[in-house]
Image (cartoon, rainbow, N blue to C red; front, side, top):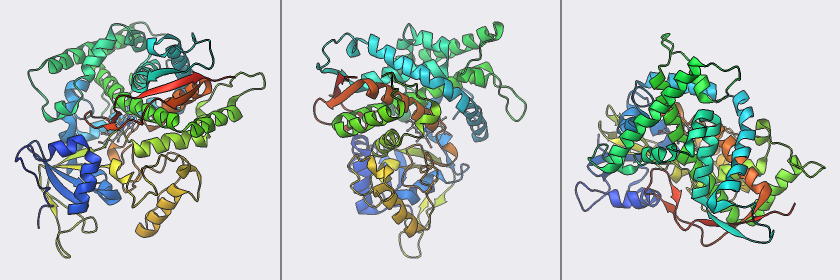
Length: 495
Ligand code: HEM
């Protein structure tokens, strides 16, 4: 039994850190050419084994959690930011219960209340943000310009705090807490994953910010208990306050606080990156911007010229909007490498990779294993013209995506459901921007609601064009972001 092939490198401990860090997708495709679906590389002293393709995704995400541990892979990054006793700082069974508690908060009757709130925040932002003031422009033909990531980051935190985080957090977020939040965020980088504790300013600020934000939530919980309001809150704090573990233990205040921080961090960069890439592509393809606008006009413009308020249920019935988001997540999944740590030696299925006809690779204990949907989602084996942003591939049942799935099903005997939100469920799918298996994202529906409402609120009022070249991805952050310059031009629509 042998270990998977090792990627050749010059410098012993440093290994392939530069190639992986600069462009992990290119690095993985290049390695697959040389070594096949499964290979190992050195990342600053760590051994990483990568498993590619749908079967590789399944190997990593469908593996037993007792053998492939997410908490061992992530806790040193996440625990200083989120805090103790939640997510990856507790046994996996507890995380599964915590995910159930959060899911209870992410339910339809809460979502119904969110659409109007999100729309309201976007319009307020357009009126108030210094770099994005549209209403003072009188000349309807005048083009303005804004940095798309700046706008989407602000809009994401404003809308998430107004809805999930609750009114107390919303009222603090654009005041004293903006800097505290930025400091906490500064502790959520690849450097902090590699080296969790250094005597540096960013680490000190991270720890101070964690304490301050955690105390903010604990204070909110105390005040809500002291002064129960008759008004029903639709936020996550209200949902978590009533939850109990199966053992009968209630969620303690610090646990609720830490779950709230985890949700803030889990949703912020993923959604702001996805929103930015979506707007960049819309700006690059004005014909699709117009198709989105037309879809809005047909469904929501009333005879008196005013817009009907979009409802939560409506979002699922808008194929152009749905396919635009879906296609953007195909080309730009925010998380390019999903990681687990190997607790016991694991044999690699022979159909995925093997050293010889009767041999088997074994991934040794202590390795990290990585899967990468970012690779399978642009793999020409599964997608026609994978580097082309083409939302229509999701709409046309005879179109490219449907064809790709059919071909994939035929070859593998697999069944991939093609319905809304279902494509990404299987651990062996080539399309999984939200992951798969027991650690799968529970924020997908919220992310679709948030992105869908933000995009439609903007598209109803504005036209977009790209200012310069389409920006390249920056892989130096944990979440793949568009590099600067990433300016978009916009103009008010004539009603
Ligand atoms: C897990 C992607 C938004 C909460 C994940 C995973 C991915 C992902 C790939 C799997 C990680 C792994 O297996 O290691 C995304 C994308 C988003 C998004 C692309 C937006 C476009 C959100 C939002 C929330 C959220 C808005 C919260 C409201 C979570 C949680 C997990 C998770 C709680 C589970 C972690 C675990 O079980 O280990 N997400 N996410 N995500 N996400 Fe998201």
